[in-house]
Image (cartoon, rainbow, N blue to C red; front, side, top):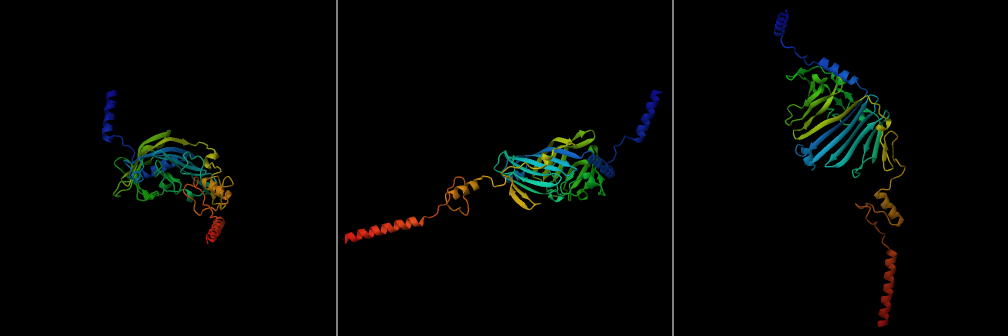
Length: 341
């Protein structure tokens, strides 16, 4: 009896064929990506990009051997966000920060010569509006998943797509102009919640390709890119990786407004006022040189020397002294000529 059951199961198996995986489907992609988006009201991603001059022509152009960029990125549905990157080009540090609380947007600049860069040199502030969000295509790992221009996730944009195709590898392929990324052809991975697996610009002559090599399961059923590569114009290669993903953590308000010091210059487009955060200009090299020159009763030169710390201020020509001396010499010379005659 048992062998008979096995026999009939084998017959059914042969007749119906191997079980087939569910084909990639556009409606299912919209459903899963919208469910993915609904899983969080706040997300924080920390990632790294690594470039070197051997595989990246842009670094060779600027004479940089190695470049590492660390990104700390936070999004909340409340409107608060943080986009803070620290770049190390051959060990030289530079920072770029954009942030916003529920009312204000801040763009933060740091002094290039400041090796620590904890307190910004300039803070520009304005209303927290979508127009202030910067570039449309955010760097990996957010390619196509997030649109920096409209500040929307892929599921919210994919609902407008009308056409797609399944690839031989089982990916769902769509044209990028349907989700706001013209020229790209994007492949979504149904095995990982239809997150973008790769995006290419076909027939570009030089390869432009974003590719996810590995996904990570942050929570059961919630996938996120883990590591991958990016190639631009065929000769600009980089590797990227994600070190941490946090969901639905309550962050303090201080994380979304810049820390400022006396040397921070504030440009507020809402009030129309520009001012020093400390109330007066800090004692920089230029103001020290001006103070020294004023105390010596010397005029301030129109253009300060490059090294304003060590340079001596220009001195006023002392015409009275030289005219008096010339007069004394003339009288003395006349007296000697008179005695000689």
